[in-house]
Image (cartoon, rainbow, N blue to C red; front, side, top):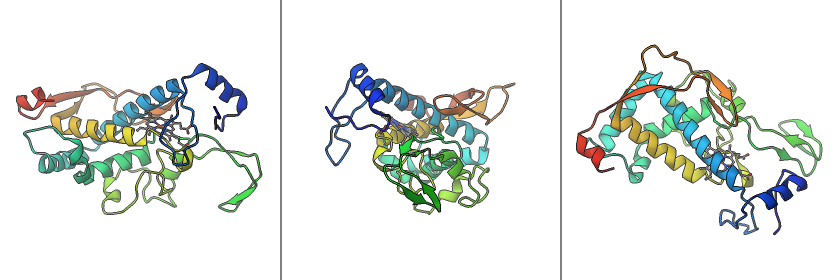
Length: 245
Ligand code: HEM
């Protein structure tokens, strides 16, 4: 099976031997594509979990954002049920909060390495053939030339503007861009949207008394909170709503 990978032949061969390879329908050019299952499962679960933790922490540090989210969910979903997939497109403020979290606290701060197959010029810089390039998605999100008050957590900046996070708008590329962008984007994004919508809709949230409040990050395989978020959840909907989940 032909294997396309930027990682180089030796590692590609190792992956071929060590991993279960599948032909996936993700790519329009229909070439065979290798998936490392361990990488896919860990990469998929950790990024998704960490994103939810960043969102919940950012929201809890900004009580007005929490109130705005609960009001939107109350308006769109109501108090007799949990949020469903079909609600997501109507939850404009929730989507703004998710985008702002990806801008300010992207779990994948550096995208996968790229190799220049030919010499080129990007933004005035000459890139010789064979150069390995790392795109810093965190730095783009924090660039004052691109974002006003970049250190502030301001979801409203995304209301009414058509920036998406699917790799078309280079100001915000939490899932990367191009043909090596995250193949789990649709799944990961939907999981984050539904989980956060229901955590916010279903519960009142407060910090555990005595816990150190911090949004400081720490980089492992992904960027995550240095001090894990601990929170107290108190149900805010009628009991029967939870019984029907
Ligand atoms: C919120 C959740 C997620 C985030 C923020 C995220 C982010 C990313 C980023 C930034 C990349 C590098 C893209 C690039 O360099 O252009 C990537 C690659 C990848 N992601 Fe995700 N991801 C998420 C969820 C998932 C899920 C759910 C899966 C699988 C079910 C997954 C599987 C992968 C794989 C296999 C790659 C490597 C693709 C390649 O090498 O071509 N990710 N992801």
